[in-house]
Amino acid sequence: MTILVTGATGTVGRQVVEQLARRGAGVRALVRDPAKAKFPAGVNVVQGDLLDVDALRSAFSGVSTLFLLNAVVPDEFTQALIALNLAREAGIERIVYLSVIHSDRYVNVPHFAGKFGVERMIEQMGFHATILRPAYFMNNDLTIKDVVLGYGIYPMPIGGKGLAMIDTRDIGEIAAIELIRRETSAAPLPPERINLVGADTLTGAKAAAVWSQVLGRTIAYPGDDTAAFEKNLRQFMPSWMAFDMRLMSERFLSEGMIPDAGDVERLTALLGRPLRSYRDFVAEIAAAA
Image (cartoon, rainbow, N blue to C red):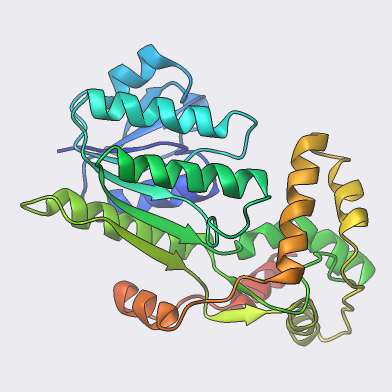
């Protein structure tokens, strides 16, 4: 019995592989570059990507459960559909798919709409799947730590509605738990959706206040300028992606990412421990600075 993890060298995928290996599962990791595959002993590394049909056919051979994660790229939807069709061809019925919270509501945001399309195809193709819908990754804030530390501002335009920020380590552990639950079930389990949220629902001002408390100096929240956010992003990512991120941030401002009733309690019970807090995450960054 083998669980295949796609996106295995990424922020979440690496956590999933490590958590599965820690639990003694048979793990195969699909990677573009084996040189980056620094995994625990016993993990089977295979080279390929989600557009390489021959490589996927080989990677899917003998796999019983699939963790499907694909990056935010222009052909994300096509990649996912190729993977799903080849998984079905290989006889794989059990899937855990990493989507995004509110994929059905942020309908104008390209990568949200694409993930919701994948969710619908998983259902229509008859897979026995858990669809994980994570909220904002608190680890995204690693990209702005130098701005916070050097300029005293929290620059992410996340607004005043609130985002239920989750640590990617919690995402990886929950994904591993779900993969093993499906893998070890005597009979296929019914489809399920799980919102992945954090212990804290933070506004821009509250996030800045956490940084202020941890650092012992004032960190300001300059506001909700999504145009400036897009302009800054364009310095290190393609224009289409920067615009996608701007559209997402505009939905942060209008709707936020608020947990449903019972989400935090459900995840706490699943993990058997509290979810990681944003304050602890910031404290780790500060300690390493």
